[in-house]
Image 1 (spheres, rainbow, N blue to C red):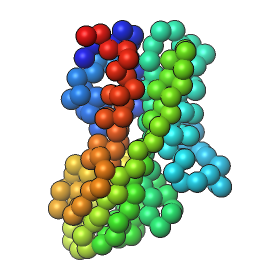
Image 2 (image 1 turned 90 degrees about the vertical axis):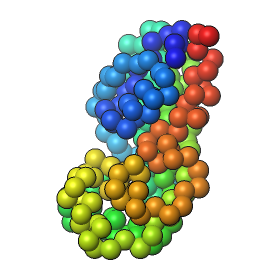
Image 3 (image 1 turned 180 degrees about the vertical axis):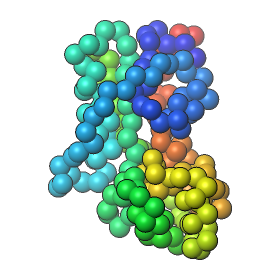
Length: 191
């Protein structure tokens, strides 16, 4: 898929790269490290788009005709954000917390050009079956989910055997609501 402007994916996430590639987009990857901090009193629904916009803002000074695409994903259970696990014990704790419950995955996106800044968020509800200690331990040892919000990847073992229901976009859970990104990038497409 050709765009009239160069597209920069500002993410090192292999999952976001895979989604964009599989959707047919041509892009380059450039990341500017950014602190992922947000106001403590910010509603959890606003956090991912806020963080994505902060990531995009790092590109604003040197922006020419590029399109910058940034995203951030959070896992929310009982109105609390659970981020990436700090270690094995934290991963166990998170997966045990998600076991036999419904949680939300919210991915925020920022698409920035020198003319405009678009932010959006997409929410998906995910239901896990009761996870056994063996399943949690096997998953942590086999898949090393330390770079994933909530300690899991929907496309990995624990998602395959543990998720019983998804209400919303699978790709939002994977890290990029591609259906929403496509809608926003359509105006730049060369047909």
